Image 1 (tube, helix red, strand yellow):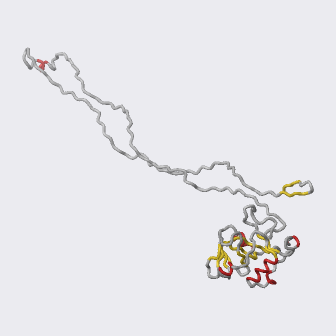
Image 2 (tube, one colour; image 1 turned 90 degrees about the vertical axis):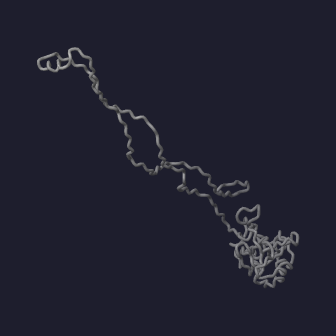
Image 3 (tube, one colour; image 1 turned 120 degrees about the vertical axis):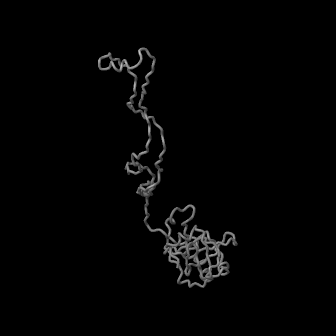
Length: 274
């Protein structure tokens, strides 16, 4: 037996009705509920062969699989069911005709209704179509069998958290640059200096050892220091990448929706929010 909790899954989901062997009978059209209990009683099957009419199938022995409904009737049986306008409520007479056609005991399936639920057009019990899923109905059916005498007010709540996301990459890259290094290095060199000494008894022998008047040359080798540059590659430091976590405050503004319930009171129709 299909419960009222299954109705939302049966409407507007593109489901189909299948026979006991799983063969397609047609598309799910509308679901009709018991006015008193709100239990699903009938489903219409749209085949596109009968204009605006749809075939009614009882849900007393039906089962669901996802958005699809399986019934213990063949396609021919469903297609030959009495034609009833699917855009109106099912009257007692129409429902009795369906019960007889599908060989369902009337006593077991006659819906219970209150005076407010009785059809004024037919003067007796009737089944109303659940309007949940219609274009002009938001949420569950308004004041229907799927609701009680209270409304549930809901609102969106904002939950803010954090997650780690990749913001970029950092890498180490080594390259060579050239710079000028200036150093002062002391260097020495030899220069010629003439020394004159007078003739004395100590050096007179050396002074008269040559001829009286002669020409000659005397050579002295001079030396000097030169700057020599040598380069050597040596390690100076180790460099690595590391990360630090920095915490800062960010202000977030987001829209949230909430429901409000107004009530009309008094003859003047004043609306008061609740």
